[in-house]
Image (cartoon, rainbow over the protein chains, first blue to last red):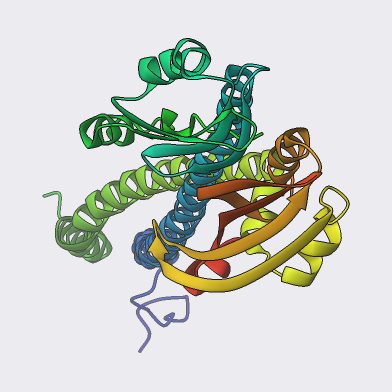
Length: 188
Length: 182
């Protein structure tokens, strides 16, 4: 006996409403998981980038250090060469001054320029000429001056003049890095 | 009586599960990782700024090196050149009536440079020649300092002179530093 005119339909738990809700939920879960995946990926990338930056920084620091040591070396070369060139120039000027110091009436035969002294050999018409025209300026330059005279054949006098500067003066001059004025040299 | 349908109960249960899942997932994973992400990002931007500063500093230092190299090319080359007696005589014999070098001695390293001492004997016609030599030696292919003792001796019409020269060049450890490339 039938109680209904319609055929019974099969009932399912997944009704269209529940399917819609499930689809919405799936999308939500998918978005959550995607965000989590994105964070994980970015985290790894950040660590990787930081490591690369750190390595690059170390390389740059090393490179800069190398360049700085090269700069230091060039500066050292500059200082040394400047010192040497200055010394040569001062020596030239000192020599010039010394030769200008020798009067026409005195003839030099030999000059020895030492680190802290000067020895001159020469001929002078007489002691006075030597004393006034050469020894006086030498005394103003050197701390110690000794002179010996020997008679020459033509009535003139041969002389040997030995002049020294005190070591202390040398030290001061060396300390101040200046070129020693011990170069009051001469020749003929 | 208004009864709740079974379908509504299912939806309610599902929603409750989703809510619990979202809460737990967010609190346990998303929020801590989100914080870490933010920290890492700020650290990375700081590291990038730091790297940029180092790059700028490196570029400035390199530019300074190039400038120094360009300004002091002659000096750098001179320090790199090893002293050659033949070349020296060839270059300066024009200034002297005669020029002889002897006794090349290797002195102790001075301030990182190797120093050679060369004894020189020459004949000059006048002191002017020696002044000229002192001028020329500052422009030579080597770093040369004329040193004591210096002797001038009159010998008829010429002046015999003898003096010592110190030649400075790079020590073996410094030689490789003299030419740089980035």
